[in-house]
Image 1 (cartoon, rainbow, N blue to C red):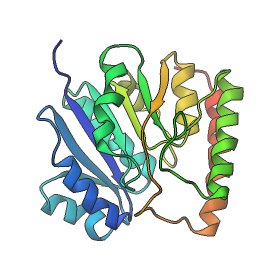
Image 2 (cartoon, helix red, strand yellow):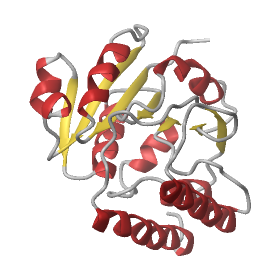
Image 3 (spheres, rainbow, N blue to C red):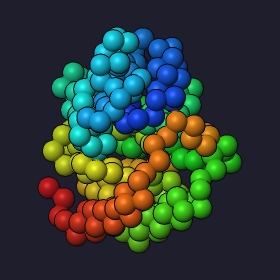
Image 4 (cartoon, rainbow, N blue to C red):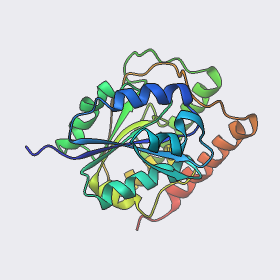
Length: 232
């Protein structure tokens, strides 16, 4: 079997402490993998665009997290990559689990592999408010698709080339979580959830209280739109 070309897309904002660790781990990647940083426009310090480029990384800037991730997918598709991996910069997920995440996509068993924090015991412990939101959106996805996905907000996913092609033009610009999964499943893409060992965040951004209210509102609205919109 030909070794697939893999682009690891790391959307970053201000996860400065985690960015240093993530940089070192991505530097130990296999030759067929490329690490590509896509930062939000306000990212500073080790996560910032200039810092990423000085470190020799492929890097681009976008105003929002979804836009940052979509930019990475567009770059991967244009440059002939077979699989794109979303690996959030907050340090939750260990890149050592990448081969296990890639396996079902590489073997054609699914189109999107989700590295879940909840299908097996892990070191991740979410605050109760965040866990409540995760349960809410897991329920939304279950109602929309008729199947359960335990970790709809996972920042550790692998997407095949067919999915990348669709994501060129149809992608949530703010939060590519539950709405993206609903949209992809309605297009007929196969989703699989597997263990993606995680730990409690050490360098994550803490959302402003207003954004903590905006996130569920925006995600619910986007999930509803993904459900009622006809796939094209």
